[in-house]
Picture: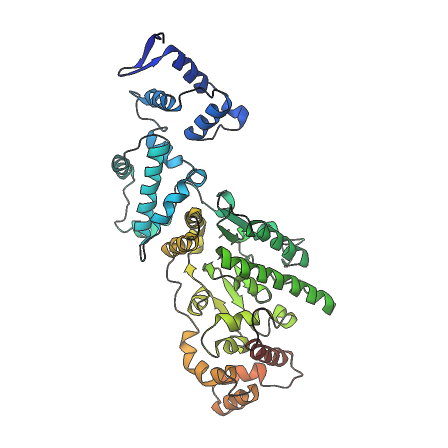
Length: 475
């Protein structure tokens, strides 16, 4: 083989003329023309070798690219900046490292963040360019701004320097994000009410079904970007009321479509995790959607009103009653909720009932979702466990529950009702004998005659709850 003249590009690193010609062709390649102007170095090299110059020595090209930075003054495009900007969500094979990241019980958020960063550094060093993790950490620690207050890190840990990280802004390869805002019927004006119409339920069902049987997606996340704003005076609902149509046949059709969606979610959740980030009010008529999955993360904007006076409750008094029976373990709790005159369930009550697995402050949810969904890249069967550890690491205490203080009354009056030891008329009589402000509030709502709408709603609910306990899910 004939020798080729060597041209010294940088002292200590020599490349042949032929190599330099190939490398400069890569360097001057019009990446914008192939929509790769924002691609990573690794992605560009892969494209160039596959489509432009298959004979190029990829490793030598990487060596030459590293010499381009040698001897130059520090600038924005350093190896540390390239590492921070690298798109790990689309990195081939990176998800195989995540099982080890989350494979520890009781790890704190700081421990999980450190393991994730180390996994990224390991992958980057092996597949993109050599990176010394200890030197990277020292560089970042030295460059980090010093907090004004010595305790500032306690509340700054939830912020992100890379944007809001909202799920709707990130295209993660292994998680299918369903944004309800894309499918709900928008009101004709700002003062109009959003509705969960028959068409909207169908569109949401179709969107979820797209990922249900795809091996590409390890998990599904349900969000609503309409609830993201913290500045609006009017709180947008996460799930609005079901559409109330004049004919009973039409109402049954809407409720049937919602039930089919709930069944799809329940069956899907057995195969892969479905995580709902409920950051706004959920109407009582649509609450079955939230009850159809075991992984629900709420915020301080979340609420569910089940009061008999609620308009949608009177239109759909039986919504999700089977789910209340199946999900609430404490006897009488479902009856207590169904009979309560003005109960509003918020995140603290949702957690107490065992229905909410995580709570994140509304202002931090955007940055937290991005970090949580990165865990969905962890392949099955570890995906669900990785996601739960990720959102628990982001979660905080939602506050005390208003339900817990009434446990003695629930056990005394509503547990016998749920167990069939007493009828609703027996409970009404016991509350009349009690003659307390608490008891009188209940009597005012379901102690009257059947001519009263609220009394009919409560009695119908109690009868339906009792019937639901005798049914299997398939029925």
